[in-house]
Image 1 (cartoon, helix red, strand yellow):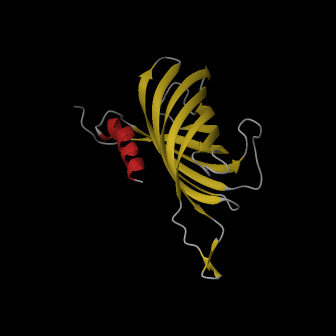
Image 2 (cartoon, helix red, strand yellow):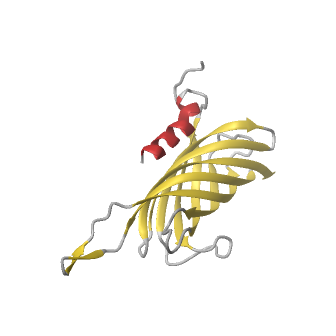
Image 3 (tube, helix red, strand yellow):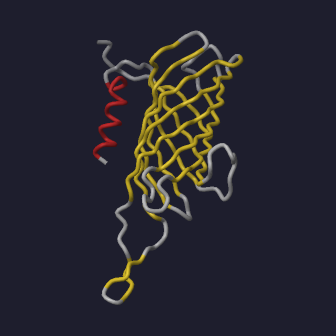
Length: 200
């Protein structure tokens, strides 16, 4: 968990030092599933999640933008696990038409999961309920977004987005399944808030 905290501080450092005003906030709800990426889109039953994050620009052009995001998320998969994740993404945004933009994001995160089923261990001739301290894993991801700015010429305007995110847990079960693949389908909005900060 300490490594995840250090990762978050490193990614947030430009924001904390007043280099991004106004401050973008992205909030999304998503459905998560265990599936091979790009073979499925909308999956059922729904396993819900929520994600909150921010971002800052590296380079801005008239029709494109290179940026960094930082996020915190939570998901609940009834038949597998629930997890808390933190991470950062390098993203590229390209204007398609008016306020419509397409994005690609490559991310690296850290997720701590806890099983949603009761587990038992055999000890001293009987089964006893097993405690769950959870599992910590790296979670690289690749996301494709389609988004729309509500004011097409204003990058600080509210933006609604649909995101297809593929990600993996590693190591998952080294002696059985080394990598577990997931798909998240996000629906969200990005908006900006004014904040005070130093220009230095």
